[in-house]
Image (tube, rainbow, N blue to C red; front, side, top):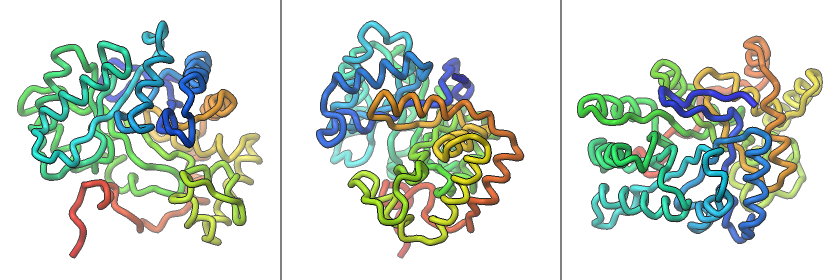
Length: 326
């Protein structure tokens, strides 16, 4: 397993991480023992980066992780997220502090390795986001801070605010990025590369589309329907998937290997957040990171999965970022 530094921090994360939004979900992994088996398998194969959020699994994902890491906390780098949407009169500082304490209890730990704002609340000034986070860093309750679903320009504004006050800065940026959803390439990834910010792509397989199991006519589960539904009925997307599959096979790999390794080949990427529900899926994800893709191979894949630059913004309207167009 390869490890990379997260931004300019001292955290070294595995290039394949574990996404845990299935943990605690009664329709996915309701049994803490199953979550523990997945986590222990990750640690055994070298995956040390575990990403969660206080909201995942109806609040139970963190609880599952805390139970699973008893006796192995030092082997893992745990990232979680808090939310500043729907404040309903609560101050941003109080929300940050309240959710941080709850996450620490859930995770049964006295520190969070990476603490991230989950989605943008454009009405909250950067000072009111970063000030409380800096307090948590100074108290030793948080090691490193990051953001999720920011655009590059918003992250740059936050960095300027941190520099002005001498506060901890965002060391990471977590965003939606895969071969079929490439909006991050417009300005977010160039910013992360230039500013030494560790990028953490989520939905790397486009809801399972890049495993090849959801080709036309295949039933799609509820979780995957939002991402896969449109692709299933898109002849161009089907043709692209077939070409990617063929390219991977020519190089002795699966299309899943290709999807992960293409992401890892980007210089800004620190760790790919990959979901897993079984120990077998953990092994497949870990193995996918073994393809040390060359620049030429990544360019060839880019040529197969061409993109016209259209689609949703990096900060989606429905996630509390930019106001809707009128």
